[in-house]
Image (tube, rainbow, N blue to C red; front, side, top):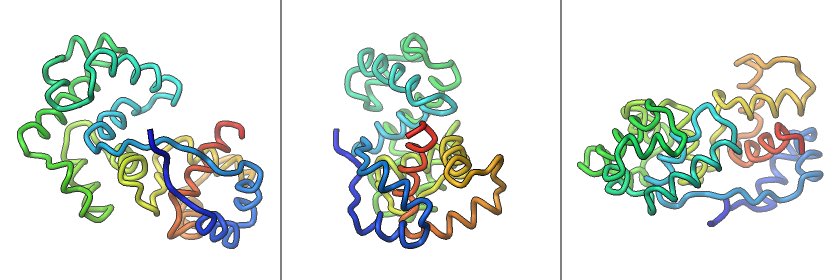
Length: 201
C-alpha cells in the first residue's frame, strides 16, 4: 500500500506559519499514512469509516476484503447486503455502499473523472450519492486523490488534535477557520499531524 506523499517543503512551511505545530512535527517526525490509489475502493473505505474509530474500521475493512475479494462495484453488488452486514457493517452503510456500487457500475458516477475535478467539484459529485456527506468526500480527497489542502471540520480527530495542540477546551468554527487559513495551502499535511496528536502522539 502506498503512503501519502509529502516532503520537508510542506512541514517547513507549516512550522514557519505555526511554531506550535512546527514543534509537534519535529517531535513526531515523518508520518507514513496509507492511501488508496483506487478511487472506488477509497470511496467504499470512507463510507465504512463513517462515525467509527480507525481501529474499528481496520477490523471491518479486513472482513470486507475477505468477504468480497477486490473491492469493485461488481464484487460488492454480487455480495449483496447480507454478506456486507456480516462484515460488521450496519444495514444503512451496506445500503450506501451498494448505491455507490450501482452508480459506478451503471456509469452514473464516473470515479475516474474525479481526478480532473476541483476539490469542490469532487465534493459535489460524491455528496450526490446516498449516505455520502462532505466528510466522506474529504476523506477521499485526502486518502485517494492526495489533494494538498484538505482539512475536515467535521472530523472529530482533527478537532481533538487542535484542542490538544493549542490547549483548548473547545473549538468554534471561527477558531477552526483561523487555523485552517494558517495551514493553507498545505492543510492536508497539517491534518496528518493533528490525527497523530489526537491519538496521543
